[in-house]
Image 1 (cartoon, rainbow, N blue to C red):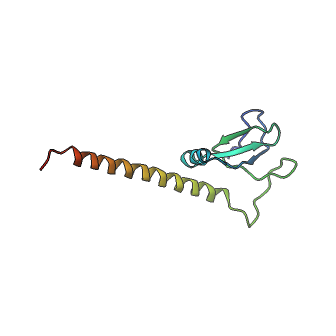
Image 2: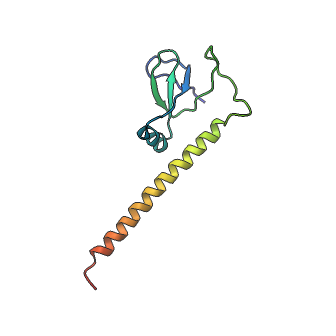
Image 3: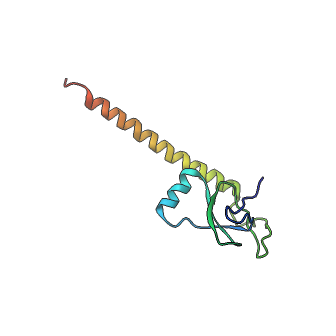
Length: 107
C-alpha cells in the first residue's frame, strides 16, 4: 500500500487533522478522504490513502490494541457515504413522485 505524501513538500511525516467545520466534515463523508497535517511544512490537505501513526522521528508505528484499525475506518467511511447517497436517492425519488402526482389533471 502506498504511503500518502504532502502535496506541498512531498514529506511522508503526516498526521491526521480534524475537519472542524461542518462543510469539511460533509466533504469528508461524501468523498471518504482524510484531512492531514504535514509535520515538516505544516501544510494541511486531503488524502484518500490511510494515514499510518508515526512517532516523533517520523517513523511509522504499529497501531496498539486500543486504537481503531485503518480497515475499520475505511469501512465506516464507506458505510457513511453509502447512507448519504441512499438518502439523496430516496429524496429524489420522493420528489419525483410528488411532482408526478401534482402534475396530473384534476380527477
